[in-house]
Length: 178
Image (cartoon, rainbow, N blue to C red; front, side, top):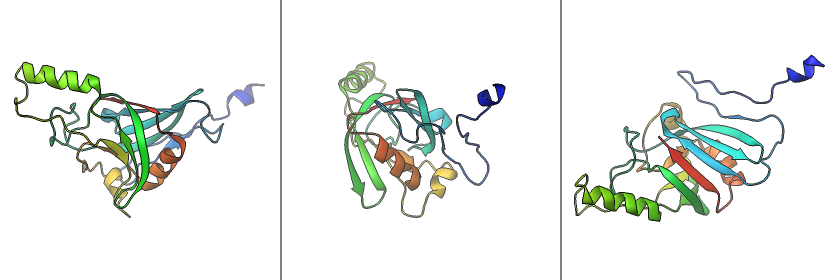
């Protein structure tokens, strides 16, 4: 009766000074239906959702210490918006990598608008090559320590990257929020 409603439905992650952990649902060992990803930069998290809603949360880090939206090539900021995974492959440095379709037409319009308003130099370039990937071998501490080390990509611990790589197909939607 009431006992059944008290069974836990998810593992929760806790931040501490030494180790950031992932969390995932207990029921349904693999996501069901369409999978999509939400990255919340201000929480330093990548979340995976499926047809039943939230599936898992993984600690993440980004590029620049600023969590602001990407403005120009080389600013090391992670772009905000809606993207899709366009390719997946093993990576010699960062375990696995899932490339995103940045810049999208929306990103190009936003970039051109910023140029027209004088917010960025007229000679600035938009950049490309944004992805979700692991860390250097044996360097998951970079994620635990909130080291903002990428050039604008999203970095996960290698074990977490292995799981996200396995469950998120090419074509999956990725929403990146502040």
